[in-house]
Image (cartoon, rainbow, N blue to C red; front, side):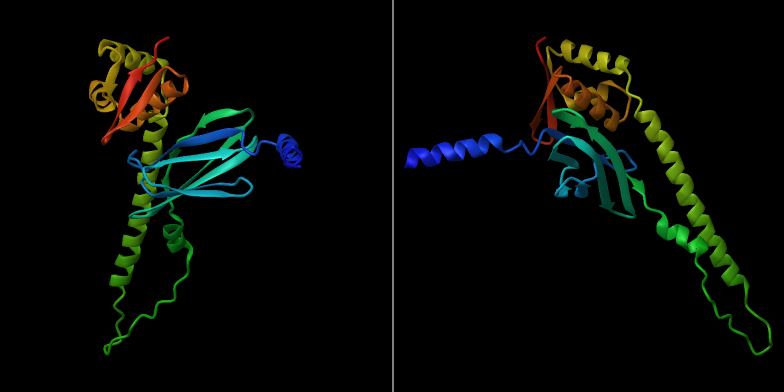
Length: 226
């Protein structure tokens, strides 16, 4: 009798489809290309998955399909970003998210109509210049924020252009260090941003060329034997 129950359970398990076929993971960065710790990351799988990226890193397991990953980060401003990814095969997929400032509140200041009661003085004159000064100050702040956002996006577009030359130079540097080096040493060796070095190492790890080992507050990079 017990053997029959075991056979039935095994048969049921054999016909149950595999729920998760791929792993989607990456890192969330802010406008300064620093890791956005404690960002909230959501993927619109069924059911929807949400996690707090304590170290800026997130990871989801999903079946094949088309997904949108949303990240929200609260600091001086509210930052958010969305990335789309199509999972067409099993395996691991790396997608890093760069946050941008949510300027909806500032933009509302330009369109919102505010009724201001202007006080009248005994002599019949109206003190209007403080209100004009406030309006000009608000407009200047909004344009400054928009210009900063545009400049940051330009820097990001430049940083995202990861060439094969830099990857080859990183591999050569690791070989010079007898196949073992810290990520900080690589950062000091190459005059590029920390985010770009991190993206290069992530790509090399995805290609199985290196292995990253977490040690203390940094990473040790080991060159894989080909």
